[in-house]
Image (cartoon, helix red, strand yellow):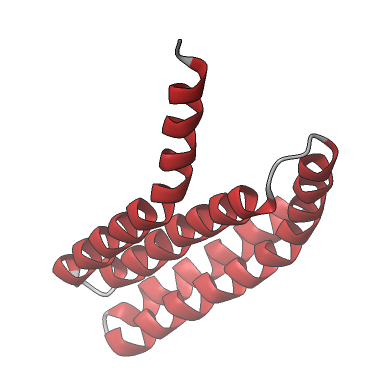
Length: 128
C-alpha cells in the first residue's frame, strides 16, 4: 500500500531531521522541505486519475468546464498554500506562514467570484 511508503519516508526524514537539528539545523530544514516535495510529487501523480474521472463526470452531466477548472484551481491553491505554510512553520517562520495562508485565502476568494455570480444569477432566474 502506498500509504506505508509515504509514512515510511516521513518517519525516516523525521528521525534524520531530529538527529541533525542539534548540530546542523539548516540541513534539518532542507530534509523537511525535500521530504515534503517528494511526498507531494508522489501524491500529485495519483491526482491525475481523480482529475480524469471528474472531467468525465462533468462531461456527462453537462457542467461547464470553466467551473470544474476553477474548483480544481481552488483546491490546488489550498493545498499548495498549506504546504508552503507548513514548511515555513517547520523552519520557525510562523509570521511568513500566516502571510502565505492569507494570500491563499485571498486568491481562493478571487477565483470563487465567477462561481458565486453564476450561482446568484441562477437563484435570481428561479425566483418568480
